[in-house]
Length: 212
Figure 1: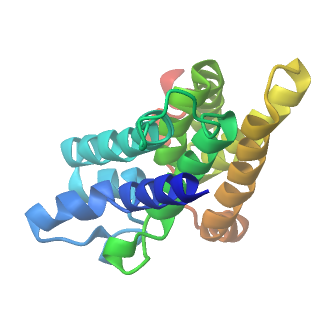
Figure 2: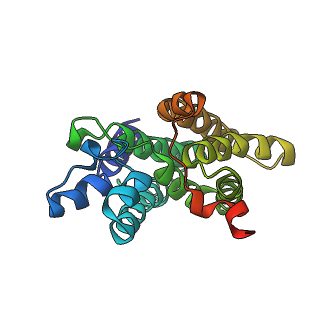
């Protein structure tokens, strides 16, 4: 239990290293005061440009992968047989990293929406599932141009895919269900703007523009 608590705490602290806010320190900007106010890759792209956004994405995905892959497998007490090396441990560390991104202790508990960190966690725990999530995200993006909507649908589709194909552990399925609910909650402002017809749209990525 002590090892579980320590690893989850380390994963949360790792998740609290927000890519956009960390890189923003070097530019003396806080993107939470710009654009949509979200400390994530999309707002970083809109307000700071491609290279800044790319750095944000690398950091945010990387910390999720490190939490699920490295921290969860860290043999703290040099034991040859560790009962904690179970899917639930990796899932717990991954979820803690996502929580750290959304509520970062280093940045007054005001972070991003967690999608990039989720991708990093799934890259370690279920690479094929991650690929499916990204494919659905891209599909919705090129059809609608809405990043938030694409993220919500992609996250919701993952547990459904797992149930349909019946190839999953209870731990991983539980993680994807929690993440789907969390993405819905963190994107509640996007949903409100969609209903009001004021949501920002990336027109240039829509497939209808390719066919002109």
